[in-house]
Image (cartoon, rainbow, N blue to C red):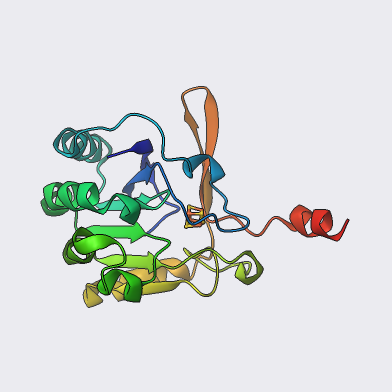
Length: 197
Ligand code: SF4
């Protein structure tokens, strides 16, 4: 599986203390994507069993009970995602995955058979392409209003609704020599001005 980075404990991408993993590679090319560096399908692959061990160990060290997988688009690597999720499922009480596919695309096989299978291992899915014009301030956990928060495990809804009352949260981490901001940022208003010129 191609992975760009892992951070923990993260509080800005779901309730509680979480391990967050960003996959590398996404072909959807949404205008205004906040992570264009994660679009190229490049970089080394890590074996999913080895990755699961690293993620589980990080969760143990940091006391995390939640896992968030974002990207990139994790579902563009659906066979690898399926293997990874099946190996970490037992360790986490809450697994949230972001994808640029809609749930109907996934259910109808748009992310491959493995993509449909992945849904069995996910508690909460946030789906759909990012639409810059629909990025509204305060929209907790979602980049744009068209995206849906789908509670595949309905019992998770209460804790997510409570968490989302806090609106958007941003955190800054150091990752190697660079600073990484996690969470959902507001729309880049500078882009509007550039488009106008
Ligand atoms: S689906 Fe997400 S990662 Fe992919 S281009 Fe759109 S916003 Fe960027």
